[in-house]
Amino acid sequence: MTVETLPPPRLSVGPVAWLRANLFASLPSSLSTGLLLGLIIVLGINVTSWATTEARWEVVTGNARLLLIGQYPADQAWRVWLSLAILSALTGMSAGVFGRTTRTLAISLSACQLLLAALLAVSPVGPLIVAGLLANAAGVWVGFVLGRRGLVPRRALVVAWVLSMPASFLLLSGVAASGPLPSVSSNLWGGLLLTILIAAVGIVLSFPLGVLLALGRRSSLPAVRLLSTGYIELVRGVPLVTILFMADIMLPLFLPGEVRLDRVARAMGAITLFSAAYLAENVRGGLQAIPSGQIEAAQALGLNGVQTNLHIVLPQALRAVIPANVGLFISLLKDTTLVTIIGLFELLGIARAVLAQPESLGATMEIFVFIAVVFFVLCYAMSQASYRLERALGVGTR
Image (cartoon, rainbow, N blue to C red; front, side):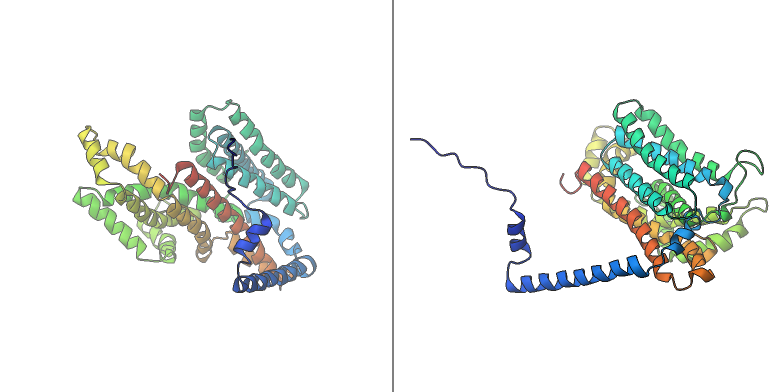
């Protein structure tokens, strides 16, 4: 007697069965699905018709340089693209060396540059900038191949990332009034360049400061605990607008007469200090989620407080609060639009300046749709990188 071998159960169904089970399972489900599908079709037709026949996209393409780099001198714009080339190469190498989350960032950066090149191809900015963006997008993949083949040492890559931010800042600001790198006042920085710079500096600097504040709030030293708690509660008790006004107006009053911070530096400092307080509370929630038995076990093994936090507590706590911290960083990126109230022309501020031009009257929808798409792409890339990192680290599963 032969025993018939049964196939394993199917883990998925065909598209027709899936539609029947999820969208047309009952009469109310079928009606709601049909209604929503009809609304989506009508909305899609209207939006497509407006975008292809009525929208004045020349307002965006004609002011592409302003929207991207603000009033940065046109003859020095190569410094912006060189900074972007450094970022592209490092991101590609990191994707090849580390993989996982950095690969998502590399794909997103390359795709953004290709989309930007396609937009600028029909604008009067010149073919050299378009060619530079295409070269940078290709540089991401060249760096990926170099890193994938083991031609880039990990330690050297980490050092390059640490040095890239001050190097890029020096490249953009210049070193002297004349010479190969003439000084460019930060008051001339604007558009998407200023938005990304403020967000990047805020994220990079607020993270270590927030971690230190979270550890300080749980410290056994009363002075450290009280100072950390007071700072966190004070900053979280006021809106970001207040911090920006204080940094712009009141901070210069407390500085020595020979010390002058430009407006961009003051805005970066305000956003960093504001975000650090919120990040500290996120990290503190992760610290409280660590069982006390692990800390007691570390003490039994002879580890001191620094070693316990550095090797046992913080790695688990930071992994647990990745979703909350990425959500905070996305909010930080969008909050950069508030710096326009202190006279900085980031992306939204430049968009409002473009709308003030006589030839741009009535093109409000086109400008703000472009701004919305830019922010959506940046925020979506950050969220997808967060999802990849969570899956790689097993957040919520182990």
